[in-house]
Structure formats: structure tokens, C-alpha cells
Length: 320
Image (tube, rainbow, N blue to C red):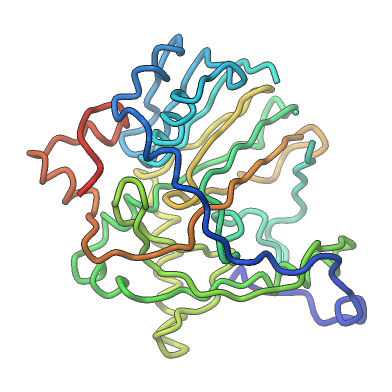
């Protein structure tokens, strides 16, 4: 279990967070909603497009983020929303040191899957990570499609999880941070979000499971929730066919949609001082579930079995 902490020490009990909790907000309409589904403007700015796996991961080579116009930025957002986190090479534009300790130690979740800050009222929609320095060997990151994870469940399990709510908590992270000598900006929070959520732009269903922060399923009894969370963790960790692993180069940038993917660093075996990067996250909408939204397979079947939309470059509409 990753949601464990190192104890309510005196330092924890006397710590006063400097900032209040982040209040719930209503963000502007997602810019992906305004994008050209074919993304012609964005793709015209690349020198090469590589789809890294059938379900997840697209590499756009030759793009300069600081030269994108508004239409290209909107198309960038749509490409990420279509379950394709993607990576840019040779960018010229940012530091947060990414350090990893013993990943097998008690209460260490550094090597666990997660989506960023799922315990917030408005968890991030998009995240961007740029690696300024990276070791020659080690320090990779991998992403897994939660849209595909939900799609691969049996109809019985899909029906079971729809309508349930995961309990996300930052309590253990708060305690471990203080005991590790750090000073969290805010106090711990718990929030409930749908275990299956609907993407506001694509209207496709995905799991919203986070082993690093989810501690319970609201509607279930204790052991029911514990075994369900254990199954979901195994489901994520066994999804090699729905996963992409990226070997970083200095200057590479990854951009992904936290609403539809989960990710983790591959820690261990390298000098962590040689890995530095900067992460930027954008708050999204409050997670919601729409029973009329579709799975990936239902979307494909509705358009005659055409799965090209998984590449994010077809004209198949994502609306209902």
C-alpha cells in the first residue's frame, strides 16, 4: 500500500502550513474544444510524427513551443486529450530537482503510478515536464492510458466501477514531507472524485484511479474497497500494452492530460543529481461522470470500427 506515512511526530503536530487549501474553481472552457480535429496547423510545424504505441504516446519532432500560434496550441491540447501524451525534441527554452531515494522503503511512493494532485478540488488537466539535464542511463518516465484501462475491463467490471467515488488524500504526503525535512505549502486534504470520469472535450470514459493518493472507495465497505483498489493497482501495473516508456534527452518536453493518463518515473540505479527538470500543471474542471459518454471501443464501433482516432490525427469527431 503506497498511502502510508512515517508517523505523527512533534514536527508534524506543530507545523503550520503557510497557505490555505486551494479553493474549488470553475476554469474557462478547455482550449481543446476549439481545435481542428485533424490538427493540420500543428502537424505542419513538425518535421516528423512518431506514434510510439497503438494506444498511447506520440512524438512530435522539430516543434518549438515558443513559436506555436493559438490554433496550434489548441490542437496540442486536443492531441493530449485524445490519450496521447507526447514528447518534443530539441526545444530552446527552464528548475526543479527530481530526486529519488530508496523506492522500496516503507512509505516511499517515488516509484508508484500517479496522476498529479488528484486530491485537489480541481486536479490538473494538462501537465508539462521539461528535462534540463538527464543521466545517460536511467531516469525514464512511463505513462499508461486510463481511458484504455477502463476500456479493457469486462462490461461487468465497468458497470461496477461506474458511479463509485474514490477518496483521494494528501495526508500521508503531508506527514512524510515534514518528517523528511520539507515544508509543505498547504495542509492535508481529502476529496472524493468519480472513479470513472468523463473527459469534457472527447466525452470518452476513463478510470480516474491514483494508487499514490487514493485511500478508499466511498460507496464500499472496508475490505471491499481494499480488494478493489488492489485489483486496480494490479490492472495498471500489468498494462504493458497500454503503456509507453520514454528515454529522456536534455531539452525534451513531455505534455500530457492528467485526466486520461497515469504516470511514474522509473527510479533507481542512476545519479539523481544528474536529473533536473521543471514541471508546470494547469488546473482543470472538477471531475465528473456522464453516463451517456462512451468507452474507446464504443466510439470506434460507432464509426465503423475505425480506430485511427487513437492516433489523434483523424477527422472522427469526439462529440456525442
